Length: 310
Image 1 (tube, rainbow, N blue to C red):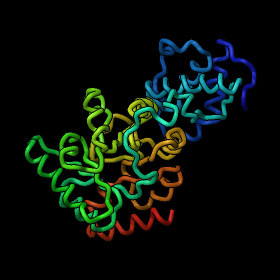
Image 2 (tube, helix red, strand yellow):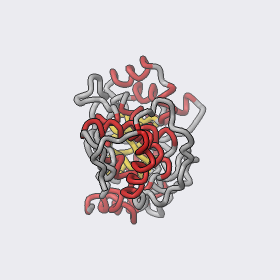
Image 3 (cartoon, helix red, strand yellow):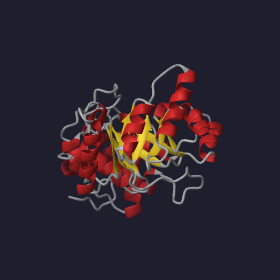
Image 4 (cartoon, rainbow, N blue to C red):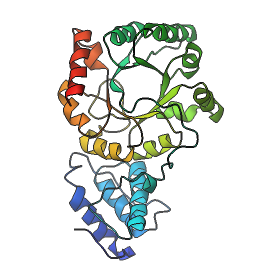
């Protein structure tokens, strides 16, 4: 039941219980996180209650803090506290107003099936199979090998409609004329402002990985072309710092980041496509569903049909 009175400090526990009553079922699969004392700066009783409740719902401290501030902002905007209304208004999270002052070049609103691939040969195979978006995720410490592979990947998609993103190797992507670059949060943080400007000024699109609310807010500050959200389900491909996000969180993220093209990633197989797409994301990234398939071209066709059907 929504509370319509102005909250006071003594209401914190009551407000937190109200949030849990409305949203506990959506996040029942997540282990509670220790809330401890409210972080410095959370003086607002709604923010304190939301931090307490979101911690109990399994959100890590940075995300619980981000949600707490957004819930307080939502309450001020509405003029009342509403426990049933999960925050999803971009302005309540401090996201940039649109249009952005210095956005990266735009990409399609729906990137479709997004194949994350280990080398240029795989990029070419999937581009020729009709996969609309491909990413080269080439791991090497050999600078010459990286340059060769990036250039080979750019060449491999020529004559196809596939959009090619290069994971991490942004300078080589600029030099080779790739469509875009994809960066993880740590890679994004490691770039100096003039390096980000170089990617933007070259006209490349930028995709950014996010794993929760705090990282989405940080990504928005850079005005990327799209945001990737995950890992949705368990994955063995890389050690994740966060637990699998699940469909309820993914749907909430999609509502908040609705101004961006969105890519869901992490442990998603054919059977999960309808439920993932029902959250509102316009793209699903896959790795094992293609590279481990007995017939990758046939698997790509099946996955693209599943996207079209949903």
